[in-house]
Length: 486
Image (tube, rainbow, N blue to C red; front, side, top):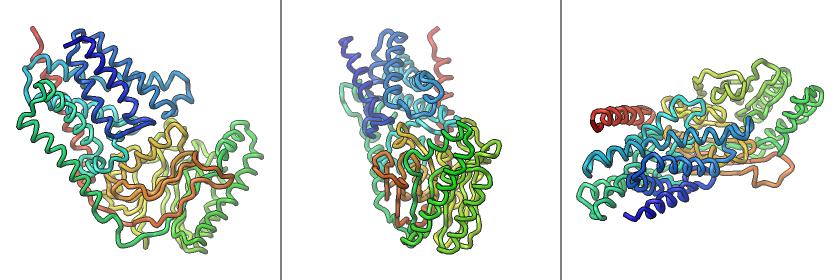
């Protein structure tokens, strides 16, 4: 093969990589890019040098396409690039294992399973136990491709990278045979098509349960969060208190107004009820009074800055004015310096079905949110607060939690995308605060929300596939040891 043609495959994989996950995600590109990266590395004579080229290309793509998606750039301008350098290095391990097996054994159909097993195992290993949750997992590249997203209702996130990896490996198998499609290859491509087809069929199922509720939400005015943080950092307690008093009064008026417009449930963004301890308690009392007077439920997130550590909590207030659920945020608490929650999800039965609530980063941990499916929650609230670089990425991750657990999700977000998502991952409502031009409350939603859960296999088997792939990867590594050249 012409040596220069190898570098064309690397160039194609690199260009396609800009559209895999990240800011410019196009789901189909995740299926194509690995094909060329496998081809490039398998055909490389100098493995060390070409691995370095792959690493630099992959890291460069990640640094550009995921720029600003993590909070690390607020710590140091080099922290985020270093993170992507490390994760890009880890992410290339499957290509190394695949190349070694390809070089040691004669071309055989069973070799098509080496790359998908390694690819899935590394993805699972890098996401499981990470303090960042599953942020960056390969499956999220299929956001918007709802037919592929349905796979997670059975396998969790890990079925998607396996299928993507297997597809790339199968194409290379056919490529190496001079594009002669064997019976086994044809059956395998047919199986992949069938799985996606079944996913598409699932999206056509009835998604509107017998009951629904009008759910409304709103986020803080543009710049208000920064104003409050600046006052805290400047130790301007008097100014902070005054700003909070005015903000809380406006929020209570907005809750009442939405109730009068027909809302059955009103949700606010993460940290909307920021304040000193006495101010937070007063806001809860005010929201309770409105809930009782207007006969509504209120999803009220509060952030008590006076307590040490600060407490980031979401409350559900019922029409009797009682706080029937209080959940402390657990995701990312070590980075935010807030009180860590226990990760145990609570539920409350209502005329609108079983409700639950978590906060923002919490939803990045599928093994915890799995409790929602196990308890047959009908509607999950995720009050959140994002930023420009992560707004679309983070919102799309929530849709996978809906599909995994067969639950509708209402996500009210400050500085980001607010959305309502049904059990199959379809967005019913979407509001981007960065696309708005308003001086008042942002991210306003008023949605007739489908209420009802759908049973999924994921709630029973959890991350079983990920663990199986991990065992398979260990087996591949052991196999490398026993088949090494003497």
